[in-house]
Image 1 (tube, rainbow, N blue to C red):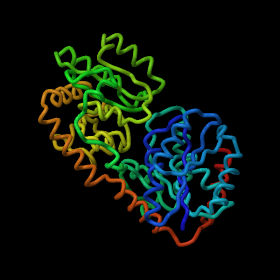
Image 2 (spheres, rainbow, N blue to C red; image 1 turned 45 degrees about the vertical axis):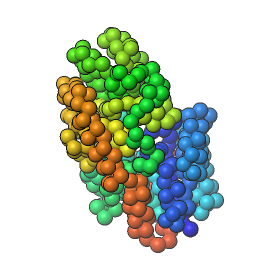
Image 3 (cartoon, rainbow, N blue to C red; image 1 turned 135 degrees about the horizontal axis):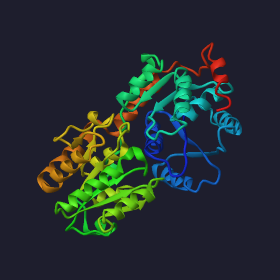
Length: 392
């Protein structure tokens, strides 16, 4: 049975890609592939225990490798050992560093190389370096999977041949999400009752998520007379700034920053409308999850959304960064219960029909089966480029 090793660098509890990675093994087994998930993480990272619990719930084998930073050569040695021990046939990377390490490991353990481009959403001074590493690595991978059209176009502009590029949307296991209406006890989890309409959002508390626009829009909704609340689940470096904004707008009894939720389904079950206010993303899992949960969705028109949401049919789509459009769409959705019900039902049907995890994994298996039979070493001429990565 061929062995696939999904690999990624992670800090804390991870994010959207981890959900896809941990759900993969149980579906790959049905197609005749053995699979494990390897995460490189800082030593003693307490958040990794949450990932281990999620892996157990998903029936996935998880492997943790201590990663002490860019100059820790023991990471490559440990990955070589694991690949030899597990007889790995396919290294499936999910970020820039696992892309680079895959090339280095392949020098000692011949295997096929596949990567998924999830995209960069938070820009820092290191981002140009990450792009450079991806440019060097992806051109030497057998297959590159992109989760949105913009990532596909970017990889093509980086020099990845089109015959090695695949566009495969994110997807979820719809059966894992309950689409029934919220119940009082579920809303009570967030200290609200059935008299207040509740908005929900989920994600890292950082600039690209646009939560400041969302909080401002909720302030306008409250001042317009709507009995509405907002719950934002997630952690990040902007928490204190967002809380200050909430305090300044006198929304303490309306807007909650709940911190990290181990199971975001708690949030989906309690809310009436899910909001994605992001300025940039690929195709966010949280939107798929909210739609699968039978909740109306208001979302910005980020890269992957037009493939998922059609305005007025299965969700509301607005321009990125526009507080005025966000306010108007939310007010329309909150004031019209029939519209919310229509959007919710159509959203669930969209996920079931076009974004099911089973369908996605069939496409992934097709990618694996397109690889040359047997393991492969690096193409001639790539060794000098791989040497550039040995200090990454």
